[in-house]
Image (tube, rainbow, N blue to C red):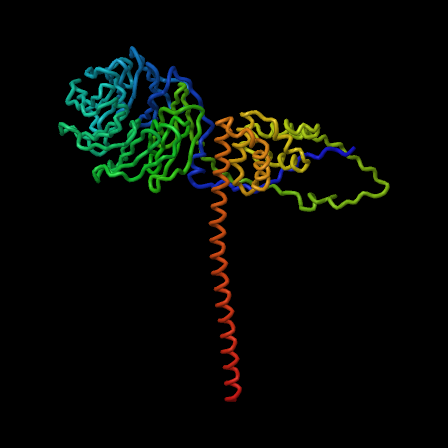
Length: 520
């Protein structure tokens, strides 16, 4: 009895990954360190001064971590309920945070008890920050109000009530000490000048605004809300420059790198996208385990810290640059050492010892070996094979067709299995690698299950998708044939013109030769 030969899966060339300078740079981080917090991490802020500690706001605590510490070096826990948006002052000495009870607390980084408490909001305060003069604080919360506070006196300077929904993000201008920006769930971003009684600019984002960011120059504003990240020109009255839609779920946080040339966005789709601020194209992407709520990059881009909904803090440190030291090269064996004995032919008196190789069959090969066609097809329709190695699924279908058992393997299936088969065929039938086989499979499926059309809405929908995919492909092929006909006509015209030109040149050259000989 002949031994079973495994199914031959045809190999196809794969496109290599494009390696850019950004890819090399952003991959230059170590394996991340995971730190578990007490609740969802709603804010991460790095100290602007060395040694660049960072404050993490989660649940009712604010933890201060060192750059390389996995345990907090200081904790502020004087909150009755949840704390929000702990932010450093530009000198790194003070820290301000909002709270669920509506109060704002100011802390000295070297102490524990709050230096000041500002009361005035009637609902939770989600946004706090220092203006660039370092003596005033702005705040905003769920009472729709945006307020300005004086640190030395502890009093409220002015309050704006222009938003019509929760205010969940804000940032100050680094250029002008009187300007700050807030973003709200009423889909608007407002720019306030503390010298004016009303906002000086309103920008319509179109989605509930989750995060806002001003470029260091103060001329460009970035807003994030829904699946969109939008860049606005403040100097042109809030003109929209670009709208980015690279995330699949709500974008929750924004961040710039130290040079301002890369923009980072985090989302509930578990991805951090990195954009170039010149072309606004995605140059790199990070993938995380769960949805992202907060994101921060250290002032020297040495550390990336990401906070997630499950309370996990993900910390990545840049790998240190390794200096290559000049080492004495060891002498390598000569080439003849490696090729020695390769061309040796065994003599008649030699005894050859061969080690038997045990061949391990895959699941679908074992089933095919025992003539279980239907189960073999089920085995290659499992998600890991169907999604990531469709060439294996198609190879088994081709083998079943060669054996003449493809029809029996496709028959006798329930609604869920038919739906799975049709989904795979509709998705892959337009792939030139699989078209010839899958067209045969689609023909057999249609022939078998035509009598039950109309009995299941799910199956009917998949048949329509298959019909639409094949119809589109036929239209593309017809258009390509038209283009091919045009190109053939052009090539034929060029060929005729070239032949005529060569004949003319040849005749001219011959005439010149005759005239020259007659003159001589």
